[in-house]
Image 1 (cartoon, helix red, strand yellow):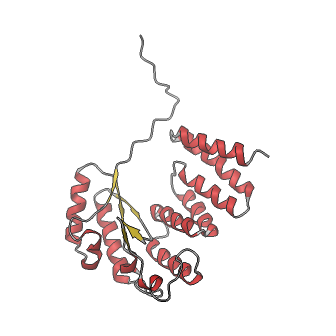
Image 2 (image 1 turned 90 degrees about the vertical axis):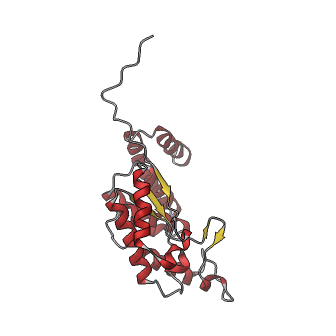
Image 3 (image 1 turned 180 degrees about the vertical axis):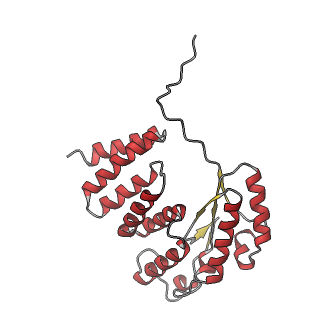
Length: 230
């Protein structure tokens, strides 16, 4: 039996990424109420020592936006401090924007759940407030990880125009491995632009193959065959 020779023309497999949901060792997710940057740095040192390359963080929505028209600058500043501290340790950060439910607990601000209860997905005032909050969290318009996370949040809200604008900008700046193209195709499809949806899937197939993701490429090929056979 002979060992198979590797194909020198085949692009190398992308390195596996290793990350975790960041749960602060002090204060659980309530640490935002009494933010301690030194404690956060100690946590990040421990995580980086394990060989992680990214973390996911959870800014609690009621802490960051306690009123529909109030987005707390201090809370946003503390989030930026956490992201900067992670970057100093070689950790990318995925910011989970809207945290209405986390670890079996609801975290919705009072202005959505009290006597003037509002639907967080359909009420125009709430959706506008959520969009303003997410734009504030985005902060740096060139931070591609934040851009992608923000696009995901807009996708949840059904705001396809915002998803399209963000993802097109994101794809112009980031080396995406294929996932964003599927999101972009869905947003174009929901907006009635089938030609651009088809183009996004075709681009996604090429990118997914180039990055060694054959199952993703097959998924996009199937979508093309089923939804765009004409």
